[in-house]
Image 1 (tube, one colour):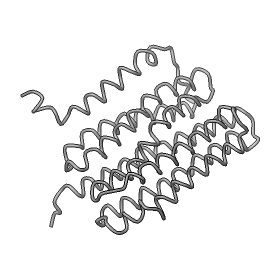
Image 2: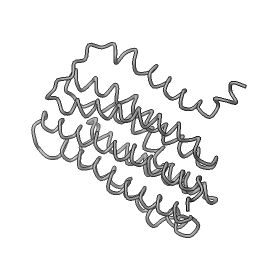
Image 3: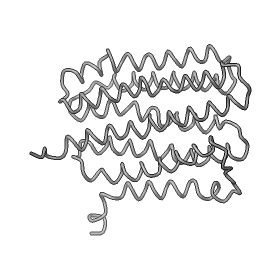
Image 4: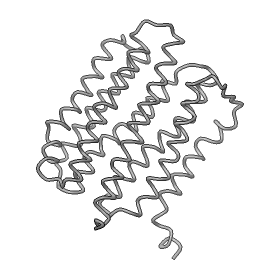
Length: 265
């Protein structure tokens, strides 16, 4: 009986417990002091808490939508949950060392970016049968983009060729969602609300994800000092994560609620 009454809230509680269990024991116990003029550190703090709030919101809002949309909202909550845990660690690295937490950031992206890309497949699957090839092409593009970027930022290969490889992966994703099979399914089979969400999501992937190459350029290709490049790089990456994780999830939440609740006249 207890599970019947609280089952719909279970993902929220599991997400919250996981978040604090993974982050609090090491990060919050450390003697981290945030300086009032450390605007990069402040951005880490603000975004980490915004991600926690978004996680709670997405999990709780699952109760408002039809079953076919619950997976999409769950994935949105998982994206912000995973990002929040990593931001707790990244902000500590920054505040204590003033160095870019590259490893944590890419571990985060290796989990969250494929999940974000899968959202295109999930919202189309909610209204039509979608070939599994769409799923694997989107995942492939995301992995090429991430591996290229990481090899350059971690210093395994030169920054310029790594940048090019990452851009090619991104271009492959853009082709699939603007001109490929995913785009055709949206145009031909989706209702107007889903078409609108799909269109907005792909523009976030276009404009929002374009922020990351800008950060990469200022961090590794602009020729400015190491301190200045680290500051600009992290602020740009942090801003991009807000747009591409929280705003992206809100688009999915909006279409899920719109498709689930009756129209008020």
